Length: 289
Image 1 (cartoon, one colour):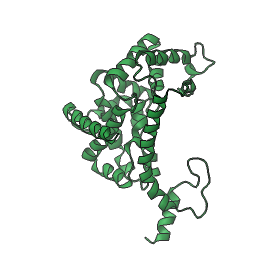
Image 2: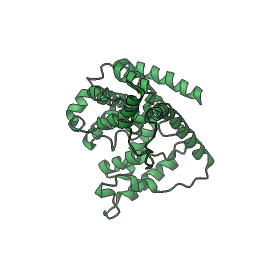
Image 3: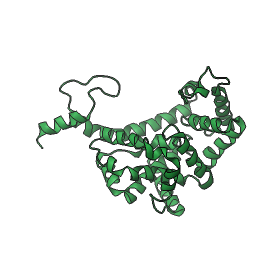
Image 4: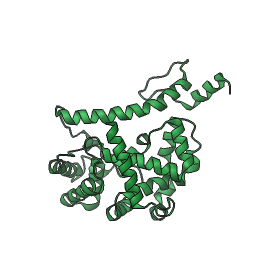
C-alpha cells in the first residue's frame, strides 16, 4: 500500500474530533498519531498511577461527595427524589469503611460495589461487612495506594490470554495496547455497570464462594466468545471499541448460560498456576516502582 493510501486508511479509522472535543485539522497525520498513541498509552497509565500515589500521600486534597452523584444515576433508588434515597446509605458505608481500613480509605470503583451491595441487601451493616470481605480479603491491594493487586491481575490476564488465546494476545501486543486500558473498569468495579446486573450478581456469588480467580474466568470467557470480532480490529481505538462491545448483547444477558460457559470456555485454570503468575508479575511491578 502506498503512503497516501495508508494515510487515508488510518484517517478513516480515527475520529475527526479528538478525545477532548477539538476538531483535527485537514492535514492531520493520522498514521503517525496512531503509531505514537499506541506507545503513549502505557506512559499515561504509569503517570496516572503516580499521580494517584502523590495525591493520597499529600493529604491536602479535600475529599468530596462527587462520586455519590455518579453512582447509578439512572437507578431510581439513588436519585435524590427517592424516598429513601440510597445515596445516604452509600455515603454511610463508604465513610465507615474508610475509617475502618485507613490503609485503603476510599478509591473510585468502591462506590459501585458498595452501591450494588446496598441495592441487594437493603442493609448498611451487611453491605459494610460484605465490602470488607471483598476489599480486605478476596481482592487485597486492589484499592489501596498503588493498586498493586489490580495492576498485577491485569498483567496476569494478559499472560493468560497470550497462552489460551494467542491470536488476541498477539493483536494487542502488536498495537502496544496495555491491558489496563481495556479491562481496568471490569476489575475495579467487579463488572458492575459493565455487564447486566443479573449476570453480575451470579458472578459475585462465585466470587464470594470461590475467590478472585473467577474474575479471570469471566474475562477470558468474554474474550474467547468474541475472539473473531476482536480480531477484526485494525487500530487502538478499534480494539477499545471491540472490548466495549463484547460486554453487551444476548451472550452477557443470558446469565445462567453465561455462568456455565465461564467454567468451560477458559479451560483449566489451576489456583497454583494463577498464584505463580501473580507472584511473578507483582514482583516485576514492584521492581519498576
